[in-house]
Image (tube, one colour):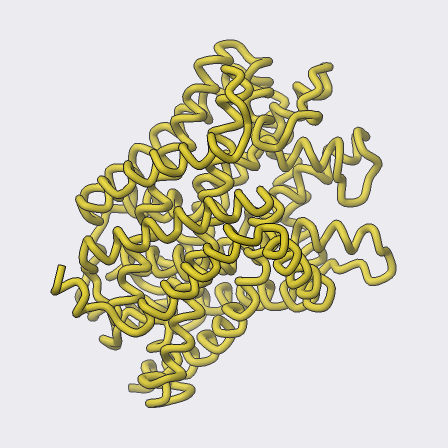
Length: 495
């Protein structure tokens, strides 16, 4: 215990204090907390929606440039180092950390909502709305999202494993700002990164708790309310702490491989038991329209159409903020497991492979949901967290699929929280690659507490409000990291 206390830094205490203060505020004055977080989110969405679209597009362009540039052969480590994990374990861990709960939560909800309730352009329920629904869902989970994760992971892996710097966000800015990153300004940067991580993970844990509750409500009539979701969070917190205790090479690795197995089983079952030909045809058509629309969709802000611009704020800007808020956590974790790979190998693996998997996933679940809706079952009227189970209810073996879905959400829940405690531990112990169990346990409890508070203060809307607000300051740090990284790369190549 004494060793654990001695190894933590001022970043740990400051961020933990902010987290506790925010939890107390949300518990004591939930209405005021919801109002202020909503006002801040609206201000950022209205005045900086264009900024989110531009900056995420630039991250993607930068990744493409690095992949095909002369820097692509640089290894994330010493020249003769080789990867620590196999391709299968590597993909499983980065995928579980990066998209887990979001894929299951929005797998049916996003496409069906865009088809029946919130289409970006076309009339609700029209044939055109189906095409828009699948294209825009592919867009929100495609290369833009993974480019955000990839760029921060790449930069951290480069500075840590090749240049030998501490595993901290502030260390990556030293080429731009020099020794000031080892003082107070560096601590500010790390506090912002840690706080964004806490909020991003807490938001996702909140989504996971609501969807597990939604499944229990749909299948067994369990009430959908805060106290049930709190109990779910408590149970999952205990489970991921058990996994945390076993460490990176055992707990997270085994859970990630389990996630991939369960996800593959659920995907194959949906593909076979669902409208197979419709799924395959929809995937092919939607992949084509997604690729063709990438340049336009990535920068679409609709300045002359108020309703369309509001849709972009509610969906695209929210998703970009979500990925940016998750970027410190996912990026740091991906960097930790990617030592020894070349920049070209890293970017190709982190962006292309998960993108293809995401597109296949949404083709299977989204197309099945839309097909069920077209066939007369009104799953669009269900809450978002219940749409998955409503779709399964209209397929053969629906109960088994629903139970498998709840199990998958639970394992993704545990893996995401487990990975986050590991990353938060590293960031608050001066970049230690093996943070103590006490530190990881502390962050495990803190992120679960924030998730519970956000659900208590306003449910899913409160989660979204805080998420978009927390992502904004870190996006600026991410831009500076790119500039610093490029400066270091040029020096590395010349040397």
